[in-house]
Each structure stands twice: as C-alpha cells, then as structure tokens.
Length: 475
Image (tube, rainbow, N blue to C red; front, side, top):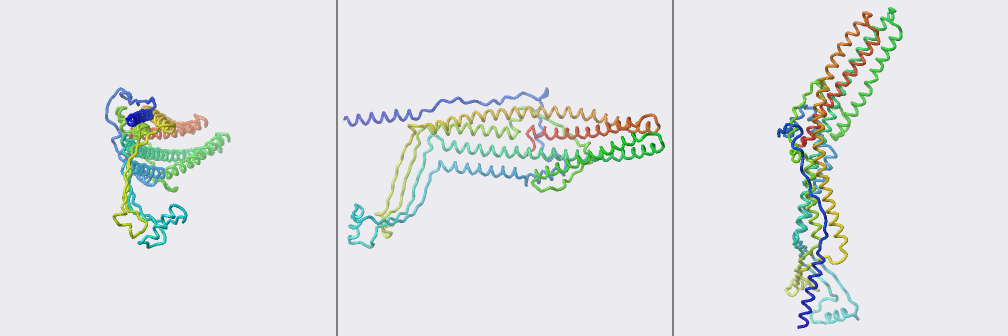
C-alpha cells in the first residue's frame, strides 16, 4: 500500500513539475492598423487606372520591345525568381517534418572478441557447437525504421503555413520589382526622348546663331557695328555648340542605363523622338486609397510577411509544450547470413516518448521573444508601406496637375520668345535695336525651349510614377 501511495505522489509531482515547465512567458504584441483616408480629393470615384495593362498604358511599341527584353534578361529579376524557388522548396521541407519518416537499412559487420572476455567465452562456446560453420561471429541486419513526431500543438503545420506565406510574399516582391523595372525603363526612355529633342533644339539654335554671326560680320565690314558685337555673337555660338557635348554624353549614359535594365551590352535604343512634345497624357483615375491595399504589390508583400510573423510566434510558443514521438523498427538480424531470413531472426520494436523543457529554457524564451519582436516589426513595416503608398499617390497627382499647368504656361512663353527672335533680328538689321537685345532674346528663347522639354519630361515621368504608385505595372 505504501508503494502505491508513493507512486501516486511521484506521478502527481511529475505532473506539477511538467505543468510548471510548460509555462509560457507573457509578451506584448501589436495589432496592425489598416485605416486610410476616404479619398485623395473630394471625388470618391472608385475607377482606377491600375485596371489597365501596362502594354495599353504605354502605347510606344519601341518601349514595349525594351520592357519585354528586360522581363526576360534583367539579372536582378532573375535572381529574385531563384529566391522564389528557394522559398518554394522551404515549403516542401516544412511539409516533410510533420509526416512520418520511414528508412530502409542493410548492414553487415564482423567482430572478434578477446578470448578471456565474457564475449570471448560466449564466442568459444558457439565455435564448439555442433552447427559451427565459421571461425568468426558476424552481425547482419536488414530492415526498416519508423519515426513520427506527433504534431499535437500544430507547431510543424504552422511552420509550413508560415513558409507558404513567405513564398507568397516573395511572389508579391517579384511583382513589385517588375513594377519598378518597367517604371525605371519608361522614365529613362522618356528622358532619352527629351535629350533627343534638346539636341535638336540646340542644333537649330546653332544654325540660327551661325547665320546671325555671318550678318554681324558683314555689318562690321560695313562699319555698322564694332568687333565687340562680332565677338559677342561668336562667343554665344561657341557656348551653344558646347552644350551639345554634355547632352550627347547624357544620351549615351541614358541608353546604357536602359541596356543595363534590359540585361544586355550597350547598343542603340530604337526610338521615335519626333512627337515628344505631343506625347499624350493618359486620363488618370486614382480611385480611392483603400484600393492600394489590394493593388500595391509591396503592401500585399508586407501583409503576407506580417501574417507569417504572427504564425512564427505560435511556432515559437509551441516549443514550451511537450513533444511526442513514436518510433518503431522491423527487420531481420543474425550472426550468420544463412540465418538472416529465418523467422527466428525477426526483430521489432515500438516505443513512444514525451519530452518537455524543464531547466534552462533561455534559448526557447529568446526564440519566442525574438519571434514576437519580429512580428511587431512586421506591423510597423506594413503600416509604413500603406503610409508611403498613400503619400506617393498624393505627390504624383499633385505633380501631374502642376506640371500640366506649368507646361501650358511655358508653351506660351516659348511662342512669345520665338516671335521675339524674328522681331529683334528685324530691328537689328534696320538699326533700331542693338546687338545685345538680339543676343539676349536668342538666349532667353533657347533656355525657355529647353525648359519646356524638361517640363514635358517631368510630365511623362509623373504619368509613369502615378501608375506605379497606384499599384499598376506588374500585370
């Protein structure tokens, strides 16, 4: 009776200690906020430009060809695709951890014990037995082993769910990279068109100023102007000629930037720069801010990473609980190969065990705390992604409006200064204006036309960036 009572107390003590060992530390998590403003402006129209495919949004066939090449050859994108495959294989690994393991094994060994040992005496007895066939004792085995960790607390299944979410997040990361690549190529392409037009304007001004210099030289020969006027016209012509070299260098660098994004060595970029100033601006429909949560790949990536981080906390928490494991084995074992397949050589075993952490749980606690901190970081990253996306859209909508008005104003200025060139030349030839007025007018006209091209480029870049900010460009 005393033994029974003692056993009961021991079992009770074991249960109390076990429950104490399973105690989980208290942590403070953080819930994410998905709140966004109701609209970007007074209108709450839900139509969104991201429903347009990038091929339809960018109508230039030359730009299509470059983007298609980049989506095949861009090294950074291909590296990301390999990372996606790595995370996909991680799912396979996690899935295999909660399934039973079955291993097949075959073994053979030879052992010779010392004569004056217990094993040696047994060996000598066997050698003198009537069925002695060999002068040695062997060890031959063939069979299968089985092991299975019971996923009582869903730790292993949760680890698989986390791996799936991380795989999906890398896929969204790839989509966001595609958006960035397309946007960067489009921006560089429009910059290239702008540089071509700047080069054309400079060459037109070189021709204009060359003709003006010839006239001034004739007037100097006729003693109507001094050498100072000739020098000023000549200096302005040289300054304009010098501008083309800087622009030519920018053209080369921009072409090579596009070639790098396309994953190819330097080559000429096919393009049509003639109608740059008349490049259409798509009617932008921004929709409402809540659509960013669905359309922006970076926000969806952050959301999936947050969901994976939450599951990782549950996985780390399960480490405090007991783990259960089943093991079994079935096979044949004999000292002689001739006896290996006989019924008497069959062996089997079956065992189950439970293991729970008791003392020195610092590593488990650290893993649990770190998982919680990573989940909090994921919350902040998710909220930052939403905030950043909203601000990007607001900024780009503002850029489109301001640069559209700026381009209209600058176009009127260019028109007036272009007329002023003709007027100043006529007045100069009739001696009713001095050469400084002609030089100043030519310089102002050149600067205004170059500024007009730059504003147009900013307009087109805003067209690219608003499409990207709204979440388009990857589909």
